[in-house]
Length: 70
Image (cartoon, rainbow, N blue to C red; front, side, top):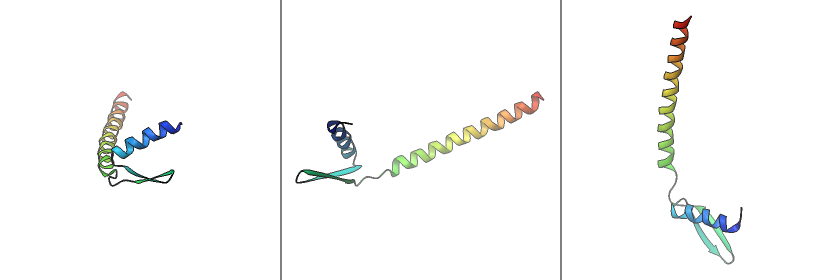
């Protein structure tokens, strides 16, 4: 990845509040920003529960249809 590409990615993360940067001399330090990923983590957990529920129901349906075919 090019330095320009890395800078663009860091700027996007910084804009989202996920990282902060500080330039000290010729070096730029990146740290985790004030905003963590709690909102995203919560959404992912809810979505995962929904998908697991759907897969469980699909598995139950397939078991029932397999039993009726036998």
